[in-house]
Image (cartoon, rainbow, N blue to C red; front, top):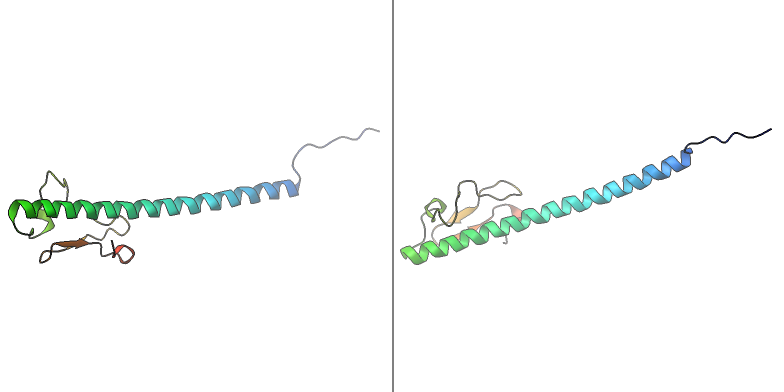
Length: 111
């Protein structure tokens, strides 16, 4: 009598494979979320740096602070109306008295 060998995966092999796939997926999603958060933080810092530079340019050209962010040079900042924190979509806060601009989103408030 010859034994017939069945081909296929055992239940244990299938469970181990699914466990490995689940671990790899969770690590990948975690890394993706961290990278996305970091990119938004860097974008927010870059936006604020650009706004501050535009305020300095305005101040040097007009000997005064801009009344609002809309008065900044359009060649320096193309679309000021859509410029907001990428993490929260909260528009940046501008205080004309001392020409400060900052992000009102609490994790970014100290940029």
